[in-house]
Length: 294
Image (cartoon, rainbow, N blue to C red; front, side, top):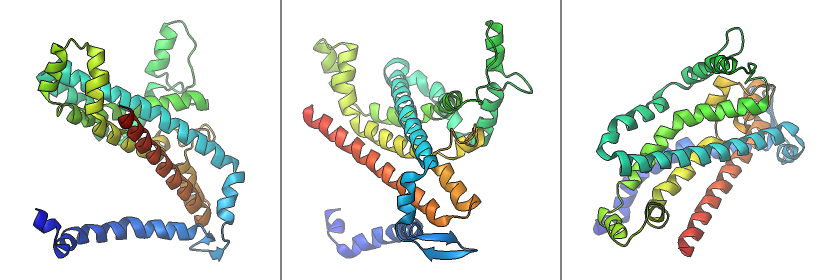
């Protein structure tokens, strides 16, 4: 293996095709999008060079501010809840259910393979108030409360979105984190038990540090996915009521393809890219600091 990795020609043959595909599929579109941010117009009306006007325009756009706040709030809340719940389920699989967890893992993983539109329609029916009363409002009526229009305000719609995406993703992150927990050596756990370590001490000082690589990967995977959320919100609320639940991705899509302003849409995409990069760097540095302190 060392001989192969030390041969530049072998490395080029092995990595060359993958790097070529990555460059064509990822890097070139990124550079083209970056170039679009310096122009105004679209393919039909033509393009005119405006320099950094599109970038400076972001600072004064109230819709960008609203979408940015919503995107960050959504990403932080959903990342925290889905990784925390997934980690709790993974602990349950490994240390409580053990071999009996196969069926439960499969059932909880199943929602992630369902079509997003189908899941959104199901949650619309669950929280419906008109023309038919959904199960949630039926429960409120049974408890003596007034039915609630969950999609009539931005705050309640936000929590319905969180609930839907948490239901879809928690099983996936549970399986992802489960793969890291099963690799923890059993002799390490047994030694800790013999030393008198309690459950919480083992989780804090042994399980979490040893599962940190997969936990870190889950956090990065989650934060980047939630910052770029699009399909679930379009299917459930379409950014409504008004634009209160419109993330940056939806505003970028509408700007580019509904309003035909490719340059400004590319500028919003650049803002989203920088945001994802900053969050990823923050997670990496925080994890490195925790490891150093430990």
